[in-house]
Amino acid sequence: MTEHDKTTHFGFQQVPVNEKASKVADVFHSVASKYDIMNDLMSGGVHRLWKRFTIDLSAVRKGQRVLDIAGGTGDLTKQFSKLVGSEGQVILADINSSMLEVGRERLTNLGLTNNIEYVQANAECLPFEDNSFDLITIAFGLRNVTDKDKALRSMLRVLKPGGRLLVLEFSKPTNPLLEKMYDTYSFSLLPKMGQLVAGDAESYQYLAESIRMHPDQETLKDMMKDAGFVRCDYHNMTGGIVALHKGIKP
Ligand SMILES: C[S@@+](CC[C@H](N)C(=O)[O-])C[C@H]1O[C@@H](n2cnc3c(N)ncnc32)[C@H](O)[C@@H]1O
Image (spheres, rainbow, N blue to C red):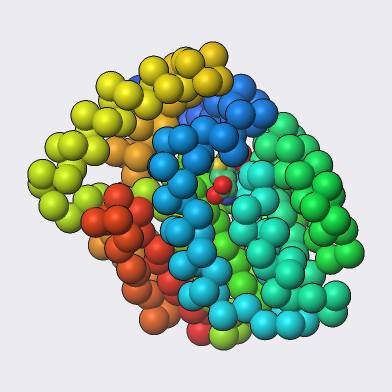
């Protein structure tokens, strides 16, 4: 079997493994300039609460080194930058130059310049030294990564022993009625909102489909264990629409 014959999912489509990353890149180049406003609109602002909980659970302290992978426009980086202070450091890493650019401009305009570094990087092969971060976060990013197991192993490698990984991601609603309502919302309304606000229905159709293809809570927990994390657990939020997974590097 050649590389071209192997396939993976891109939303509900099957695509050659080596084409997924460029399809994901097209999505985020297209939505970057409208990303923040769409997040607020689509979630009714609730994504801010999911991120707030992530920050709280991170228990980040002054002087620590944090990697916010798939950091995009920098919602988490912004808070971490304040928490680690001038002796600490936050690296906002993202594979997509457009998202990285929007994030850099936004945080620079907020005056957050002394402890943030921006790195264009793929979560599957992080360009950082072994054992170099106290905390890694990946928020709404893992879903888009082609080889998630490889990405989890790469995160484990760069975490310090005792360091924690937090994965904030869409997951599986725990209540069938909620799931039905959420399906109707995602497949009928989201692409229309995307068309109206960002002039791009397709990217928001991909968003809805990619959420359905992402491993559910227990599967992701097992993937984290298999990658080598210990004390793995998760918290459901908004009835399991979103879950925050935690794992520690032994
Ligand atoms: C939905 S956005 C999330 C941005 C931000 N973390 C937030 O919560 O608002 C997903 C981000 O994942 C990035 N991404 C996708 N695949 C990636 C990969 N393989 N490695 C690193 N970043 C990736 C995209 O470029 C995009 O910026």
